[in-house]
Amino acid sequence: MTTTSDTSLTTNSPDATGLAAQIRAWGRELGFQRVGFCDTELSADEARLMEWLAAGRHGDMSYMARHGTRRSRPAELLPGTITVISVRMDYLPADDVDPLALLQRGERGYISRYALGRDYHKVMRGRLKGLARRIEDAVGAHGWRVFVDSAPVLEKPLAGKAGQGWMGKHTNILDRDAGSWFFLGEIYTDLALPTDSPVDDHCGTCHRCIDACPTGAITAPYELDARLCISYLTIEHHGPIPLPLRPLMGNRIYGCDDCQLVCPWNRFATPTTEADFQPRHGLSDPDLVELFGWTEAEFLQRTEGSPIRRIGHVRWLRNIAVALGNAPPSPRIRVALQSRLGHPHPLVREHTRWALERQAVACEAEGGAV
Image (cartoon, rainbow, N blue to C red; front, side, top):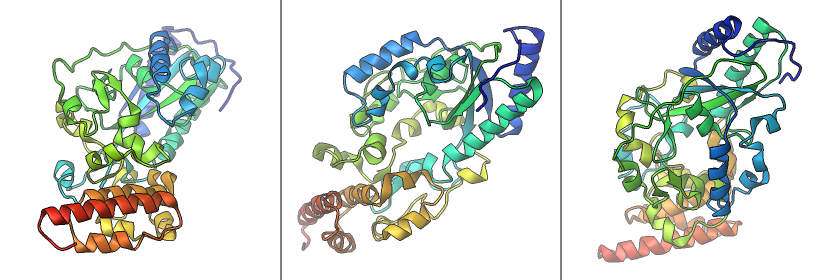
């Protein structure tokens, strides 16, 4: 990050317009599918954020409230910021596994497609820094800082202002030509650059994402209650998963893609060519019993460089226990669950007991021996 500016660019000046075009070209060279620019005015989005927080819909994510208005006022996070450079990078893996079919295979685990490869934070942060340094080489020292879901930034509203797409009813950014399978990143800068125009909403009367949400987390068009969201429950939430929600989670052990999988605009999504985002360690359709058997050392080794590692081994086992409880009854699954009844952490023990009870009930319903 650089914080001293000696540039004199003004918005829409020939130099600023030419620089914006260069930044877009450099971004494409670095692997970003689109680069956009916007100002920092987010007052309407700030009001919606405050209402969302006041309703407690952020759940355990106390950091979202702790940062106050720094999330919605970029200049409070990086003084002098007047332009946000928004980038996006496709991540849908070029994999032969059908995600919708995988969700019906109860003995397998479903991991959100974004987490199958290398941690996107690391990949994109490096590219964004490279882009910022190219800008610095061209115009000299100026104030800038890069973000990849790593600080209090309203990345989706900023992406919408920068022409990356519109906010879909599932609250993800959608593009008519690329769907929603992309990561977002930002560069805050004190350079005055010409801004892009927002994109019109093209969701129309479609409500497939709302209907498809397993836990009803999309409470209304454009409204999400994180406390009900499987991505929140399996990644952000540290405690026990609420009992009424466990049966609804199916085999989803890290994140959830249902709202994206059913979105008609995603038929236009292009699989990524980034090697870093291709599935690793057989996690595109893993066997739940095998995953549940990983020791902590194995978990750390097999999730090295992956965003999955951040939840830790205990929550990993918690999530898999729920999926095993939802799986078709199987002696193999019950043996695996019984092996964890003595786990030192109460979170694992409780979810394992619940899963065993679910397996027993399912087995009896099928007329089998427990």
